[in-house]
Image (cartoon, rainbow, N blue to C red; front, side):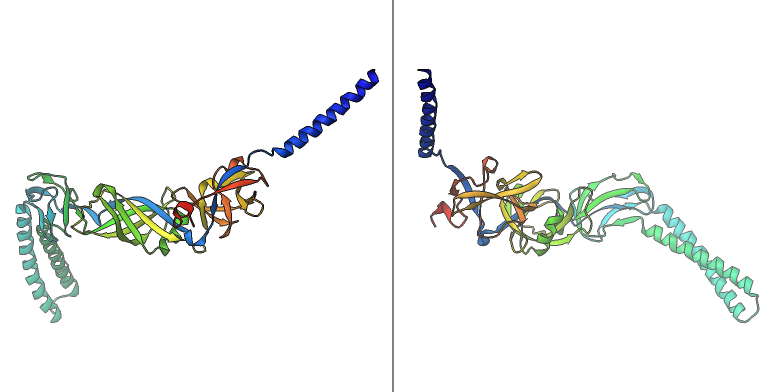
Length: 355
């Protein structure tokens, strides 16, 4: 009896195992749906966006070379002044007295020098006597010219056309040499200053169209051109790039406004852009899942990232080629040779995925 029981138990186990195996073959489990992205050369148009600020062509503090009490300060903040316009004037009374005194001394020594010069040329006086008279004359001449300059410097004029940005003093105040009087800005040509990473400079140099957007001024798509690119990176590791924006009086753009520069470019030999969610890391290496339409399976492939782009994109320089299809989302939940069902991402020119 016990012998018969020992035979029945293994037979039952074998039967159940065989039945479970057949049942598993009948129900393989749900297929995993994944979002895929086809790499098409014609759609490899990328966009760079830089945030920056509107800057004036120049911002200069004006000051006197001489000191004294102000007697004129006709400008106020916000005034437009043309080049050569009077900004301020110092009381010139003391400088006029100094000029007249130095002029009288200069004229006297000039006449004396001319007489001694005639005597020296006639060899009636020694050379050292002539040289002393000449030195005194040249010293008086220098003093007279310096007095003229100081007298003329009692007037402060604008070196360029622009707007009075700030006044540092008030009229009748005594000021010293080099003390700022006003600040004047020249915004005849405005600059848009942005900062770019090293790996973006090649695209900027090759860029043909840059568009300016200023939300506070309701401006969008205004063409601008590159003025210059800094030869050296700043403390933040970025390069300063300046764009030129002619100051059209029809648009209300002012220095200090925040701005945005956008640049569209097509990938030609500089890598391929893919969704950032398509990459994953394992053992300090970067991979993507390549989808095979023949076997409907995925296999990982190592890639190299060149840069992070805008709009949730990254640029790949090695490991991918046009025409391939990659998994664009959920990459962390897949395994090698896993069978999947693709959900194709419609392209910009195939809205709705109808083509």
